[in-house]
Amino acid sequence: MSGIEEGDFNRNSLHGVQFGKLYKIVAEKPYYFLEVRKAENEGGDFRSIRLASARELLSSSVIRGKIYAELGVLIDLKRNEWQNMLQELPTVTKEDETPSKADPVLRRMFEKYLAYKPHHTSNLLSIKVDDKVYFKNDVYHFCLEGFRTYLRMKNKPHSRINFRKQLISFGCREGEIPYTRADGTILTVECWMKDADDSLREMAVCYQDMLDKNAQIIAENRLNKHDNEEAWDEPWYVEKGTMFE
Image (cartoon, rainbow, N blue to C red; front, side):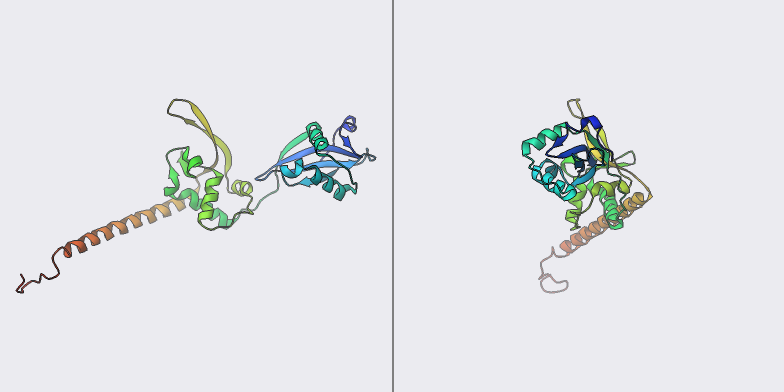
């Protein structure tokens, strides 16, 4: 990471510390890198401190602690001073490029979530409202919260999963799809998308076979129950060939 231009030093200095660029890393949970160095070391390289969240970035006490840990400089940084400094810092937004290995167990559960037809909907808005999956033109559309809900139902721990990286490793992409309301106005629904592949098609066929088999069993049970009810329609005391006939 390169620092700011030399002419910006004085403007971005506080209490003996010079601040360089602020890097926002776009990920499932965004995090930040802030360039810092001692003011007396104008020609030296910047050091980077990592801030795990926006809350850490906005906290002057966290910044003080990080600067002390990295530079060994203890500064009296006030909250309003730091907020004003943040407005001045050049900010660079970058994608998180750390590679993520696909979790095979999570991928299998993801495929089950997409392929299971009872999860599907013909109403696009249901992917937002009811955690459903919208399937059209060989593309699955879904929202992350819907998949999280499915994992909770299956008692799959997921608090430490970087969903964005995992979904990308599964071949998913972020996008949006237009939705026309009854009054003719058009909404844009942001969602994740996954093209159907051989694995998903196989899973969908297996689920359909299972649903068909379950429906057949239910239908046969209903017939058996109906036959049994008819058999019990006669009073228990009626016996063929007896005096009660």
